[in-house]
Amino acid sequence: MTACTRSAVSMLTDFFSSDDIEATARRTGFVKRASKITGKLFLALVTFGSWSDATTTLAPLAAKVTQLGAHLAVSPEAIHQRMHHGAVAFLQDMIRQALAKIPALEKVCDDGLFTCFTKVYLADSTGFALPDSVHDLFPGSGGSASKAGAKIQAVWDYKSSVFGHFALTPWNIPDQKYIDTVVA
Image (cartoon, rainbow, N blue to C red; front, top):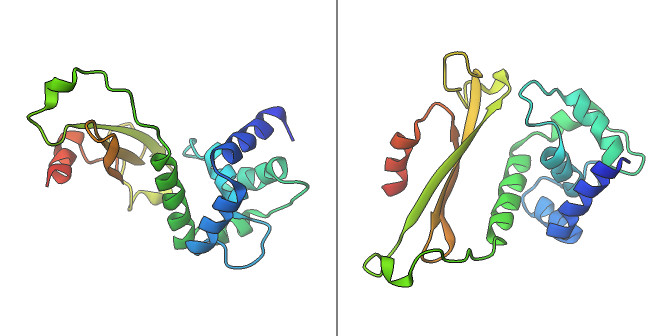
């Protein structure tokens, strides 16, 4: 196992306990019985894997498993079989848990500045390319950009230091248009 990979897995288990990861994997239906692909292994694979490259195939991810686990061999087909609604629910719940751990941000404005408002929202998004095969679910922005892409839309409530909204949307929805959904 490379030092870089070991460091990545260590960071993951420093942030989430192994028991919490596995409990979430079972609760969400990602793990139903003993398997080589545990919740912890899958989370490490998709968090520190090659998913940022829209052309990633399952073969390099299967090869990455040997670096993450102690002498494990997993086929690309085995990873493909785990890509189901339980995997989505598991990853969504882990993201929710991660966001809940974000410490309250230090206020940077005078406390009196927003007293007449009940809430003050800060909205932002970040986009990323996805494999062309998911174009129907997540169309890209068009032009010469990727045919498929997604955005993470986040809205932070400044006064209460919590996320007021968090969503994964297709890349082709402009932020200016999406904010109407958030306000509604």
